[in-house]
Image (cartoon, rainbow over all chains, first blue to last red; front, side, top):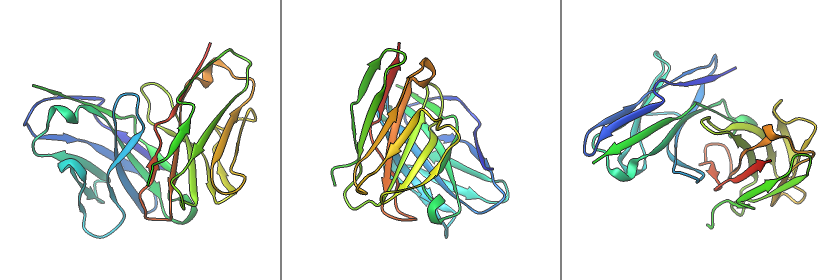
Length: 116
Length: 113
């Protein structure tokens, strides 16, 4: 079975500073990888996804992530954060395709707090 | 598109009562998923439909839980004889096919008192 570990439960950062949210996964087969953001009392919004091809994936709101197969990691980065980026971020993995595509396994989440 | 719609957004119920949540996926999305999220945790997969067929159910989905998608459009998730441990946010998601974005709804909060 696959699993996802988000290495930091909380990440405080100052506005305009860079940030990295770390995600490691374990799986014995190929995976699809996702990052979602959740604002308080709301659902999940997709930031970016890796299905295949280039290991550097660019998403919305200036976020990007790099798939590293050898290290089984999919870290999320942003070069300069804004107050509005304060939210909880979830890394998720889907094993293979077909009917399992949308069966996501999520990490525990990382709360990003951007301070002025 | 109008997004994934869930109703009600909040529900407070007494232990032992039955509750039903409804999900309207994005139109023409043939795949529909239910997840459960408790405080401080990531969402956990519950079940999945392709059109009207329920293709997979998690072990988390006890016998008190039942989900339907009768005409391949909207879906309902019913919890019978609710317990305090059922308190969570129930999220619905939909997608068109493999590789496409999986869109989540705003969630339905359940509080069992």
